[in-house]
Figure (cartoon, rainbow, N blue to C red):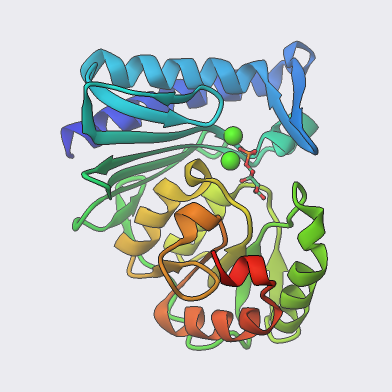
Length: 268
Ligand code: IPD
Ligand code: CA
Ligand code: CA
């Protein structure tokens, strides 16, 4: 295993253990509102601190972008870690056991290492650039579904961006009528890990942040899939509008998404 992936795994497991323990003691969870429908807990922050400490102990010069702490500029900007300490905070708060730790490393602007850890199921998804993707050390691949008809897609609702509700629901309707079914499980990181593992045939969501998708993107690519924005381009890390699937399903997803793009989605 790449030494930096090894550190990422150690950080994800330590943070995940704290999250899983806190989940059992829900009376101690302190919830705070960051924005509209956007919550954070003391556990998000505790998990984040563990991850940052673990990384900086081994690589004190590296840079970090983390959801709750923001940017920590290191002396070496070639290495940038992108961290979501707890993806699926709403599930965590509601007692729904579906959330994950997501850690990615970019080297010179390219995704290089990725870990998504589900501490409830003990599922560790890992990827290293050019080396494939694994679930608990076994190789995973995206599904080989050839079309949307009969597929199961994962998605997320734009709950922080309700002005996009109409556009989103129109995309959803066009896709849903073709699919076998849809899942809205509540963790974009796990949605992408599940695309990588072939558990779902595709994923789309708008308005995501880099820490929601960085690790999941490398997992999907290393599992043989593609990740794009809603125009089929590479602007998803900026716009947050993200589609993931194998090449054939992705093409069809974009065809059904395209008619419903608003001007701001086309320009981004
Ligand atoms: C959220 C989850 C959710 C997605 C949201 C994200 P958080 O992350 O990934 O599935 O729909 O857009 O913000 O806030 O729980 O880390
Ligand atoms: Ca997140
Ligand atoms: Ca989070």
